[in-house]
Length: 524
Image 1: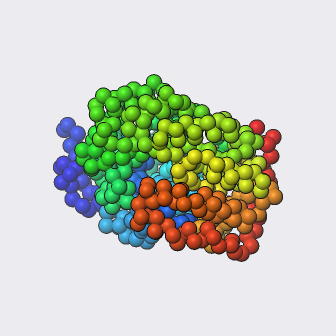
Image 2: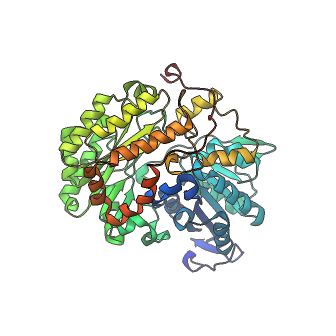
Image 3: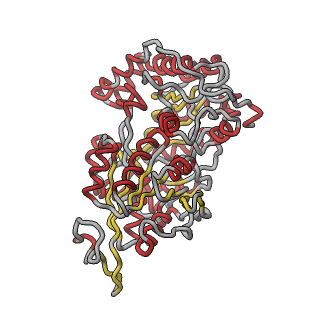
């Protein structure tokens, strides 16, 4: 039976595809971008963010289809559909999957927990898998409380493929102990298998965008496509939760092929490189740009990227611009050298100033990304950062409050110092609401407060600083007009409600989030 004509019911003796002459059971896999109550996490600021294509699970889906001929994959993007846990579960009941894979971050970890627990309780033999950095760091919470069967650590493509193969012989309650890169519960304890070798990124198929309706994503209406040219990062910023330290990049030909495919298939005309570090290999990046020019794609599409300030050079930007680059995002973080040192940013204020000026002089749009309330910050250094942002020739900014995401060095340091000792990890009534607070934009909320504040700064003060930073930057008419030019009148009008919140006083008193602090000596 061909996989495309298989019945919609669950697994049965007739559900198989033919691999040569050997019958193979068909396995139905549903991959889920976990639900999230975006209003709870971002408050009025929820209109400032749009759900993008769930690249992570789309890559897993494409890899499964390439390496597991007996798999039928479906995607549920609960974030994009604004579905609750209950609504997502109803869809699963209709799909009747054999395996459910759920990807989540800390801010929607509680929804993923509730969904996984419900699936395991009510869908019998379905194998439930969690993936991403968050469940890896909180594996005890998920596995000890029956929210999943397996947790995939690090990259998920090859591990998911092997799990599907094992499922055919082992079922949902079988022995997966020889699968690399997973955690599971066995004989009263959590067992971890050895880490899996990282993939050659050029062997991974393009994301399975055909499994979603791209037209339902706001970016599609603007012709914007998210694309990945590399994985990993060579820098070691202490606030970053990136778990792939080895830098691997796709060939220029492979990236060009995906650009052409997405342009011709979906009509995309703007490509947003969502790499942790774009341009990490100069020769590869230059080859990509030269081929964009040689093929004429630089005249047909535009693109943007996020770059470390240390990589910004005049000759580099000149070639990138000729290849179609129009927007550059720079992780600037702070306007204070000591705060940058504690964060292990590998750059100084003067480097930042020069990099921004080079991008601006090249007549490219500059996006400045700042973090307020980093370890080592004081009221004075935060004010310094806010002034620094206004002084720079930046077109648009993001001011996030420092959030110690699980997987980052800062998170590990805080855990070691007992900063979160007030949270009983065995008490779900404490842990799940605590995860909700891993939000970097509490300024737009009434009920959430920063999960971390530097010594000497209260949660109210940090929220006030974040509101002031946005308010003062965009209060100048020239920058307000630039935002209208980039996003359009309709989008900017939608932003008026959260913008009004920036002018209001922070209400309520919030408890301090912990007692331990990160001193310069702790992270130097």
